[in-house]
Amino acid sequence: MLLERMNKLTWGVALLLSLWYAYIFFQVSRSKGEGSGLLFGFCVAGYPEAPDKETRCDNCPYINSHVAAFVVDVFLTAVTAYFWYKDPQKGGFKKDIVYLALGFIILIHGLLHWFLQQTTFDFLPIINCYRPDTSDIEEFGYIIFGTFSFLLSLIILGFGFGVNKWFTWVGSVIFTIAVVVLTEDTGGELILPGLFCIVHPLSCFTGLFTKEPLFNTKVATLFVICTAVGILELSSCKDILRPYGGHVWYDITLHLAVVSATPYITNQGKKKNHDD
Image (tube, rainbow, N blue to C red; front, side):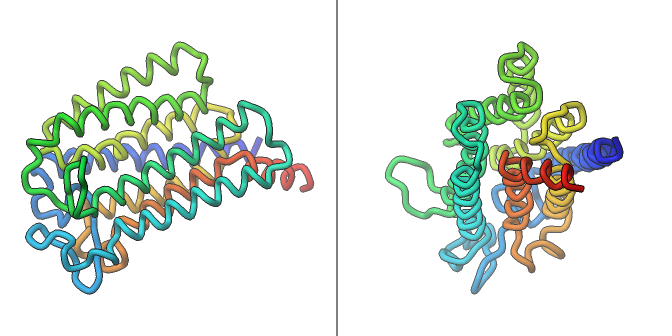
């Protein structure tokens, strides 16, 4: 009972922080990110020179926050696959789907970072960490954005309440519409961070009201840390986060939370609690 109360308390703290996170995002979006130090909505550090709106990532093509986040995400995807391999109870369709969905969330996020810092593409628009004019990619971006929003919502609500429940599907549609409407006037470049700002309250709401072991206290604690990093990214990029690596810390903490939701980790937690 005490552990369950601690779990719900931690998710409650994460929910409050996530609502603050979303509020700060809307404040930043009203100014189209001017003065925030964000590039295409992200706090991007780089070496030997930090990128800016003029040089973009031309002076740091190999060492920047997007590349670092991509490497971290590929590694944590591999960790998720390793946990699936080591899970003594693997083999069931439902459990395999959980691993597949969690790995998908991490890997697609990493591929997004790889795409955002690319300078050459034959069939996709070039961002190179920043794009001054987004008018030609907004329609394409919103199609991808809306699809990903729906899938992400379906995964989160499905994990928490069951994918076969009408609430999960209707809630995913409502969430997708809300996200697209609320971010459509953010200047195009802020739609991606807008998704993650808004998905935080959805995840925390689910964690607060579900009893599924995927939403355990480790995940909740990492969500608190991750949300705090997100708040720093939006409010103190230039002064605090960028000198120490920028957005990569968001990916590290967010996807450690995702890895902590794997059945391999949750089963270890159950075993430890049982032994205690």
